[in-house]
Length: 114
Length: 111
Image 1: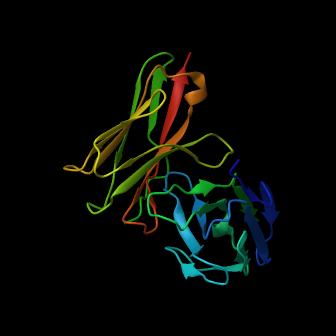
Image 2: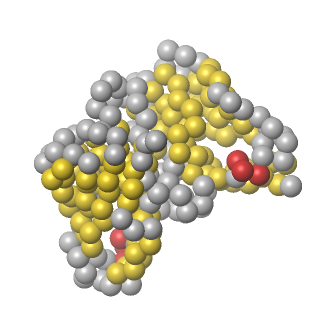
């Protein structure tokens, strides 16, 4: 059974803290993605990765960085958390074989920055 | 561009009725589309997909219709059940590039 897991379901941090969100997939997928989801807005792409140690900026990368040291793990880092980064964060993965493939999502991490 | 709305469109249907959820997509070159269902507190789940060389695809109790002329996608759910209550959103893809997601519609099933 396909699975994308995220390290935390709920997280509360203080302004200025460094925050790590971890995502692991067990499907040997090449592609991994980090999105944030805010009320009334579609999923917005923060960063993505097509391979180990490879990363590309999405639509809203400011204030974030990522790390992909292993194929199955993609980490999102908030260098200095701010209140406007309070959001639901969703990780997804997709096979790199073929173009007509869905993305599989994790359960999400709801981050609150105080 | 980015949606500015802070609240989701809501569709309320009576249990047992059919539901139709609509999505306007942005890129006329998009060739692959997915509908996702997202229940409260959970990540999105794949429901059904369709390629641009089709205009209709059916699954179990769900049908997706694609109208490329007006860049419109719809999801029909037959005999809507309480478990169908969720946010539904569409995603479009252009030849393997990154997906672009719609803002979603909240479906409420009334008893």
